[in-house]
Image (tube, rainbow, N blue to C red; front, top):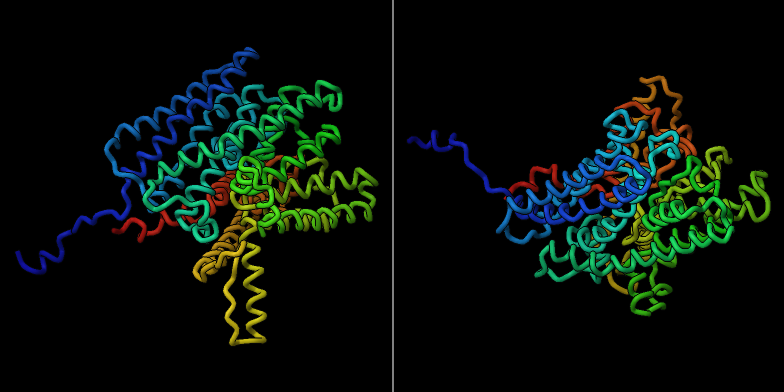
Length: 509
């Protein structure tokens, strides 16, 4: 054989990622998720509704997971590189299996793209909906919507605190090194340990909120708060999801309910590792020492004040109502929960800018909230301040610190790249939504398209126009709906794990 023939012979390259190891972990994560479908099955049985779609969805989820796990027995432990593939596939498969009940039971979900939108919105805790009247849904399907957000919220906490720091997504590895396990621990072990550590706290907060809301209903404080509503809204509040069983979100409920939900949205928007340390381990001072938490509380106060002043000055509300609605909707959008106590779609332009702006600020990293995360904004602010000081004193050497720990320069670069990438995807999504809407003759303005794209990518849920807090995304065409679904998926996983999987270098040894 000549040298030329040897060079022309195709060579089989070894993959740089162990697909078997990734699929084994993925299978072990999917297997128990099928059990979650038994919750709506119980509701369906209690209300005399059809249960087979939930049984089928659960069987597909667990069956697929068991098949993956069994077929990849003996695979080595998955490492950080395999983590990208696990993260990217997990939310995609869970959302795909989750469409079965919507397609089978929901008259609102006649198109597959609508069912996928609703399922992804639930598991990504976005809270955007294509349903035009959620009160007409079967009780079992209504609870399934709520429960998918609760499941997604728990998964997000584990993802943020156990997986993404190991993958160094957007600078997380350095920013959250204290939450990371040692390099000798496999990824599957990491996920299990994190799930055990935070599941109890997550469940406890949910149960407490359920109890409070149920008591409001039983005592007459909130006549609208039935036991079903108490359970449903506790699930989505703690998950910062925003799905409601009412067509007009939280508006029908009493003022006392609004204030309780505000408190729990703030809790859910706090770093769960910080909550665990302060609540479970009794180190309460850890909250006040945390720079991100201080910025979080400060921004809530400032943004809420601006909202209240705007509502009072424009005569939208008066007195205590202005304070309640201003604070509630500010906290809801900043934590990317997406509840609404009133139709802010009709409020003055200043309030619209504030509400869209706070969704990009977001709440704490390590919480169930979406978007960029406040800790990254804190670091960018520190970087800007240092650059201004360097302009005056070029010889100054000033490392940036977060909670007393030095942050590496490569982490700062990763944060800046992530933020620009996030904003770029948001802009692309807005353009795609705007173009598709114009092709379908929909009355969608530039701001409405931008707000819809931002609501999907940040996980806030409600936008403006017909996709406002009391409206629905149903009028959007298939292309726009698919783009918004993709944005929910990308935004929830913080973009990078998905994009890495599509890079050629990821698959090379």
